[in-house]
Image 1 (spheres, rainbow, N blue to C red):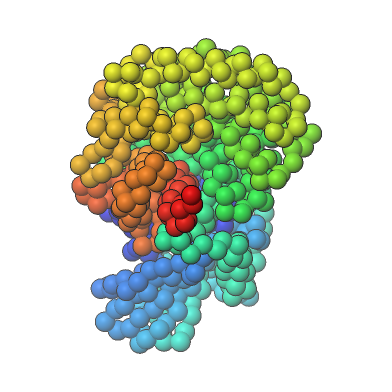
Image 2: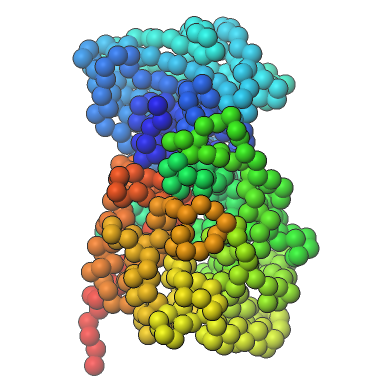
Length: 600
């Protein structure tokens, strides 16, 4: 039986991520990269599609579960009638070793631990050839299929059908270490890992990375964990930031809105860069800029909205019919067909992020500014084109107001790059394009009767992305037109639980079956809007509510089903966490303003 999404913990080695259930089962893992085919896919099916369970045999309860400080080293405290154990799960960092370590330490009495291993390469389709051997370091189970190999060092397992099972006893004061390591099948199996050293190095890495964050604000712990999640979803070598480590976790249980998020969206990554920069993580921001330069290099007309972890462009969408999906939600997809969409806002998102990087003192190099000029040329060449919008609608292309505003923002950043930062470029020409867009948006994207901006030109439907208009400076947060837009959003999109939908799926022809749960980032944007427009109490109350939707490890999914108190969508979701950071920053700014003395 699949666990609720909120019952999972994330492990990360900055190359890929594993999801571990509260019950001790690793139900999702792709080796060696985030976007590699899975070796464990039980989260999208059953244990027959691959998993690794380590838990006490018989009756047991989880006393507590937490990360060690600011790390992704997970500790689960188990209690049975005969004793207690502490299970420490982690993925070693810094050694390029694709592995998971599970250390079981006896705390009290004696506990019999059970182990079940089902290895299924290729998203649950490929049964490996399995053998067991011994060397000077102990027992090994080897699994090989095609280019992939896995080696497990653990107490001996026994074949049971197409799985391997076993049990071992842990006494108080004793420790048993298990390691599962991936390697290319044409290479020799790796030597045994020095577990204690790897654990110390992994803890040191994460704590050192987080040490520069020092914020005693009310939501400081949630912000720190969110920044850590954003780092955990960043590939250490390439600098690419994936939107989530999972695919096809449903936006509505039993529905069809199931997408592969294991890729690098320019929009999401640009917003992540902003969140990182705000809190002093300049090195990560530069890593992403370098990734961007490599990914989009070439003809600007070939610009995509997303790329692979290393900048790959070919991400064809495919349905995996053999997987029944999470909670029966099909189809299960790999790849993402939205890669071919034109989304007019993307250039603006990237330009805004790089403008903020300049404002933080980073200098452009011989490549980065010419690239940005070519992006503005691309935007100009498509100035009047309709697009699919920020939400990747699979219906007819439209002139989305948010997209047009982000094009305005792109040219605005170009103008300021020349006039404020001394870079070269046709500032007067960009200014004319920018001002023309502004006039057009105010005429066609604003409904005077509702006193509100609208989702698309000439329509009355609302869209939560309109909350980004003041974020990029198109209007002030307290501009009457923006306040009218917020009132319309609250009327049309705010549900009975106080959460904001992206748009009305039942009223908008987006090419999909209507129905989804509220996208958490939208409600965090509403917190930001409230905080910047004098609605401080409402902002604080909504922020507390949203942070309360995190699991006990501080992780957030893409969406939330408040009626059933359940997470929905891919997990953990970078967009939710970066929006949390922005909302917390806005609340802190509001608190600071309220604390300043009034001057004559």
